[in-house]
Length: 291
Image (cartoon, rainbow, N blue to C red; front, side, top):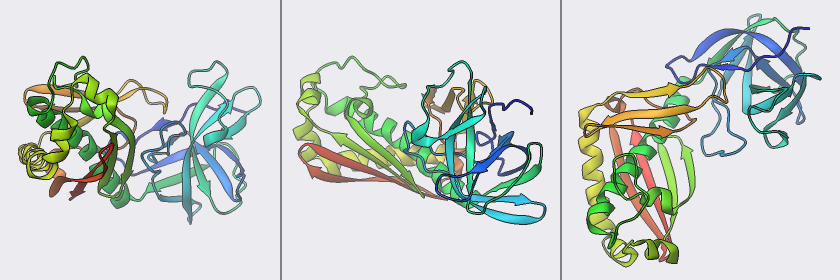
């Protein structure tokens, strides 16, 4: 039997279908089958930071379409070819004797031998809605940092973002979630942040009239510029580092990110935020997008 190799991932480029060979086809723990292929355009949900949902789509086998009901990160022990999926992965990436793969969950029980050719088709509209939201989340966090930097910090904060602004987003973020055309960031406005220099009381008082207004002004300026977005990757494997890149205000912003993204800010018909103040300790930023 041929050795299992890391899945080549294609979702860093606008490619929504491909032909690939089966590497593994094994019964799934919850029923149906887990398929591991040589390459895939499907983005799997991360087992470490599951903020970006898995892609949807189908696998074509000998003219028959099978719905992909889940797509996960998996790890294969090379000596035994045992497949571990999602939360059951027992090793970190780059562990000797292991490879990381994309696992497509099919509801049907299939018996496909290694080397069988299949066609993988991603739901393009769904992936693009997630991509707009994920890139939008990066842009809104940068815009929020910029707005707060000038008027809401009383002393120099040691941590800066890629544009040189005090990194409120990095300091305060406790959770992020990506959904169709919406990115949700949750921030904690605690004592530690105030000690670092944030005037959180002023932020709360001026949240809608000043902060939201200025963030949306900045986002609209960037949206109209239609700048190219690229995904720089250090290799084809799922575990190779990937970076979101976009030139904003003569600064090439580079953010480590494993999600899917737009190719240009010109893809946005709408890019704006709204805030929800849960309490004086918790703030939610919703980034809403559309084509």
